[in-house]
Amino acid sequence: MARTPEETRPGRMPALARLPVFFALTGKRVVLAGGSNAAAWKAELMLAAGARLEVYAEEFSDEMQAVAADTRDAAITLINRAWMPDDLDGAALAIGAFEDEQGAAAFAKAAHDTGVPVNVIDKPAFCDFSFGAIVNRSPLVIGISTDGAAPVFAQAIRAKLEALLPTGFTAWAGAASRWRDKVKASGLSFAGRRKFWQVFTAHAMTNAEHAPSDADFERFVAEVKGLGAAVESGTVTLVGAGPGDPELLTLRAVRALQSADVILFDDLVSRGVLDFARREARKLLVGKTGFGPSCKQEDINVLMVSLAKQGKRVVRLKGGDPLIFGRAGEELDACEANGIKAEIVPGISAAQGAAASLGLSLTDRKHSRRLQYITGHAQNGQLPSDIDWRALADPVTTTAIYMPVRTLASLVAHAQANGLDPRTPAVAIARATRPDQQVVRSAIADLPARLAEAQLPGPVLVMLGATVGDLAARANGPAQRAAV
Image 1 (cartoon, rainbow, N blue to C red):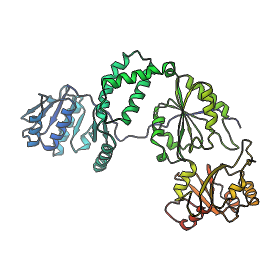
Image 2: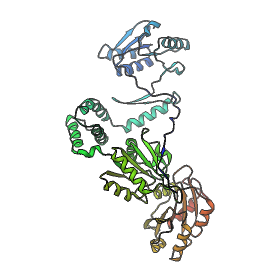
Image 3: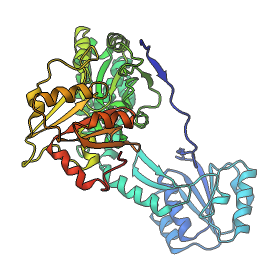
Image 4: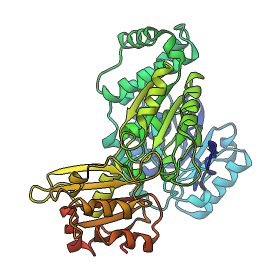
C-alpha cells in the first residue's frame, strides 16, 4: 500500500514547575533586604551579574561586609537601616532574607505593589522566581532547578555538569559574543554565517582548552569562503537511531538531530529518540512497513534531495545502523547524483542492542568464531534465493536474522535441509532495548510456531547459534525484560 510522507508535529511542552529565564542586570538597581550570610551569597550573585546593589539591614554579617570590601567598584551600597516600601521603587529585582513569615510577607507584598519580581530566601511561598544551582562558564551559564524539592539533587547535577563542561568553554563563549558583529560584517551570506558558527562550534567542542584568537576567526571565515557555492546547498546526514532506547544514541547523532532543519524518520525509530531533535525541525514520517503502508524508496530519495537543494540540513533517521539493511546505498547514490553532500553517522545495530539487553555475547572463543547478519526477505518480500545455507548451518557461527517474521518457517525448513541442527538454540526479540521488549526462546526448529503463537509486535530480530544457549541459564536474570 502506497504511503505519503506524514509530518509529525512535536508534542506540546510538558508542564514546567519553573520557567527558566535569565535576567540582564548590568547597571540595573537591585534591592536586597537583610545582612545575613545567606543574603551575602545572593549579594555575590547580583554583583557577578553586574547589578547595582543596595543592601538594607540594621546589622551586617562579617560575610556581607567582606563582600562589600572585596568589591572593586561602587556597585554595592550597605545602608544601615531597615528597608522601607519606597526603597523598591524602580528596582529590577527585590531579594529578601527574613527569618519570620510576617517580615517575608510584608516584603513580598511591597514588591508586588510596585511591580518588582521578588525572591525571599528559603521561603518559596513568597517567591516570584528562584535561583537554583548554577554552572558558570559565562557568558555560557546553565541554571538548574528542582523547584525547591531537592536542592542536594540539583547540586549533584551541577557537579556532574561542571565535570563535563571544560572551563575553556568560557573563552569560546566569550569569543562568540565578540565575533558576532565581525561575522555579520565578513561578507558571508546567511548560509555562510550559519556555516561559520557550525565550524566554530565543532572546533570549540574538540579544542576547548585552546584559547580562541583572531587567527581562528580568520581561518574559520576562509574555510567557509573556500566552500564556494557549496555553502548555499543543504546537506544530508544518514543517522543511526540505534535499536530503540534513546540513551543508546551516539553524541554525534544527538548533535546531528539538534542541528537539523528537517528529519525524515522511519517507523522503527522510537519516539523517545525524536525528543533529542531540535524542536523547530520539521519531522516527516517516511516509514516502510513489511506488507503494510510504505513510502516508496524512490519518493523518499526525491524528497530528501529536494529539501537539501532548498538549503536545508536534512537528517535521514533510521532504526539501528543505517548501513545494515537500511538501504543507505540507494540514498547515498541519490545524493551523489545530485551533487548533495552526504554524511553517515553510524548507530548501534539492532543485533548489538538486542544482545546487550539479553546479556548475550555474539562471539565466543569456544562456541562462536563468526558473526553474520542476514535478511529474512528479498526485494519481492519472499525468502531470498541466494542465502548461503552452509554458512547458516555452521555450528560455530552466530546468525542475526533481520525482518524474519513472514519467512521464518520457510527459512528454518531450508536451513535444516542443508544441515542446520534443529536443536540449535534460538531467540526472537521484539522491540529490543525498549521498556516493552519481549523475548521468545526455543530451539530453532520450534521457533516459527512459538513466534506465530506469541504474535510479537515489531520490529523483531531472531538470533541463533551456540552462544544463544547460554541464555537458558539466565532465563530469570536481570537482563531479561519479558520472556514468552
